[in-house]
Image (cartoon, rainbow, N blue to C red; front, side, top):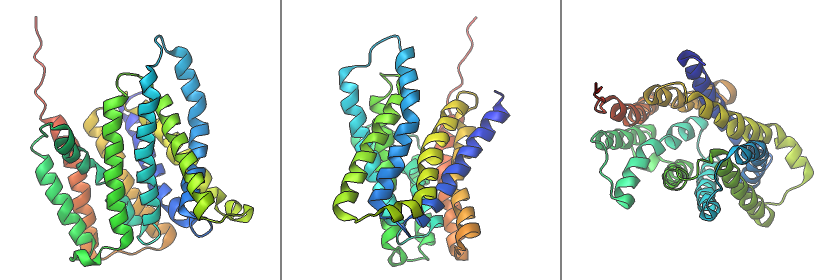
Length: 297
């Protein structure tokens, strides 16, 4: 695979994930947030299962016994992020959700400083301030303008960040990305369906009405999108990968306008642009300023 083909794969992933916000939003016309999360990740777990089995058969060393417990913790963080995002979409737009969810790019290094005591790259602090300004403008120039859904989506971005930090801590020693994916998807499926069964009455007609969105979010957003990302990032640079994957927020806004007729103020567009710029510089600048290895010989 060439670098151009890899970058197109990443752009494809961004488009899939961006359209996923529309599916998540429209599904709740027929089904509750918890049932959507549970059923979506049940499908994703089924997609990941054969890949995890293939990965297990190829492994040359057994997986540590503690890994399953750690993968469950990662699944709990993913469930918290997916749930708050889904509830947020009840009262915020697809455009806002796409950009506010992307704040995990800024939150990851900030939380790493707070809890792991690791010094971040200097660009984190201007990036965090840019993100803060972008949220302020996206809310209409007053934090009172933030809806409950906007606030839940910001909380969702914090949980996404926690999930990514846990992946960084627990996954590197196992070399089992597909197994990790299957376990975390299964945790979300079990918890989502359990909470849905208790708090959200459901009938077969509701599932049928929301089935296209459930299938899209489960098979494409969580399944195909993840596989494309994993394959493509082997053939391109980290800065380029960041650019193309961050397009998720832009595609969410585009599909929100085209498919749902959403509108946003001029100030809101400026806020979106600043958030997007913060996401990019936090990912790209550290890579570009890494010391170059000096050849010996």
